Length: 471
Image 1 (cartoon, rainbow, N blue to C red):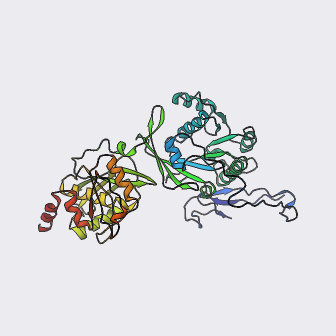
Image 2 (cartoon, one colour; image 1 turned 90 degrees about the horizontal axis):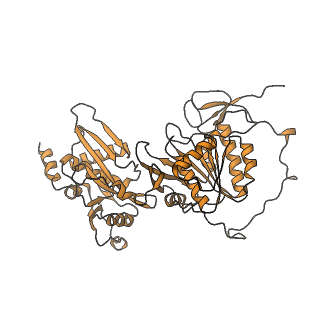
Image 3 (cartoon, rainbow, N blue to C red; image 1 turned 120 degrees about the horizontal axis):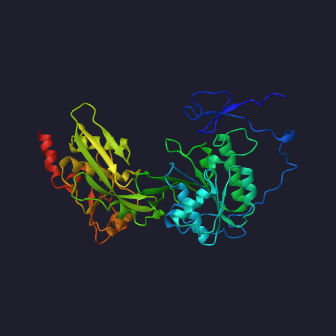
């Protein structure tokens, strides 16, 4: 009997190759090809036949009965990211760095559902039952009803789940530890992860329970395993944050039932993860308004307005290669903004080390932060603080013009709620004034070009820039 031919599969994209190579030709990743054994063939060379195939029942969009309602976990920040709660028969993939709090978050969400009268099953492949109970005792969750188990063999898990026909939530921690008997691959390999996820997803769709999968991440921050895993699930959540920082951000990357890029903010405490209902006030709690190089940005994360502080520090560097250190923002966009300030405003910063930080551990991806970063750079260059009662938002073009950004009303309302009295934003186009509702306690300062920001952000910057040009 001939031995089955081996093949190699990419752990990043799942492409198969007959021999090993250092670089995957499909996705371009290096050192991702792993040796795999082919799946056993069906007995007797079985092939699908139209005569044996069953018929599919089709229904209209309205259906015979209304779809089941969402199941709220009662953790508002978690429900916000999910789009209002768990959808029955949906599959959620939660990824994050080791020790960030993924298991703690799902344990708290499961016990919250258990207290609400729902049946919850928690299966761990990394910890024993006693270890989970020890964490639950530390968090004060031992009284909540929940079915616990420690298992990794997927056949046993699927057979045991039939004991819970009314289960509302099943948690698998983690998908990389699951393995299927008959597949000659180690747990965590591309073949095992893809096959285990497929069987679990099919069980969730058949039995109607919501399924949550914990996924490991690579050193680049991406979920480990084949990329097809993220396409198979309904929701992909990333749990972000620094283990040395108390804030944790739950960010929605994909959501078939709600908005993407929604965030939930948590604070890691001794009693577990605590919700942060007003993250803007928390991020600005330690702000000092009399320090140069600081500006408040009125940002938007999903549908939630969040105010955060942009901090900039300039240090003279007489050498030939100044440093650009950026935390929480795009370094390429900072280089572009420095070039625009140089070419359009005469602000010479090329021979300075620039350090930029977004306070609070958040990461900004929207271009609306351009105006706040420019205000912080101008403030740091002149050593004059920005107005502590003013927020900034707006996109800056290469010619120095300011462009409108989305959801300006939400940003203004959040600023007024936190006691800010002024807001610097791009100049509205003709006919746009009637469509923008500005709070009565807030004065809107409209800026058309980046040169106008010099007189708005600080009072002494214009003289400082003129002195640089004369010299």
